[in-house]
Amino acid sequence: MTKMEFKRWLNPSELEAEYGFSKSSQAKMRMVSNSSKIPFSKIGNFIKYDRIAIDKWLEANQVQGGDL
Image (cartoon, rainbow, N blue to C red):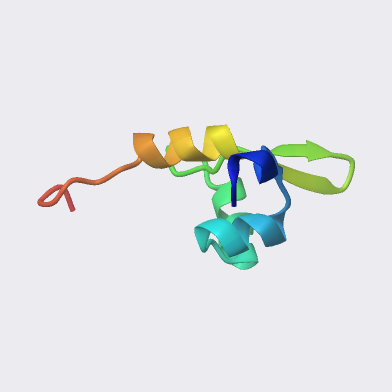
């Protein structure tokens, strides 16, 4: 994806295609009550993911070797 094609808000299918989180995993991560809760917005029945928030969330939940 080029900079001109950058799309900030992703739907569940787009998040799955770009980040590899299945839709069922996304649903589970939206419901957890700890630090692995994925950031999302819900407008009516529509779920949207902010690419910037997802990138920050991934960085914040990064595990270093030996930290497992």
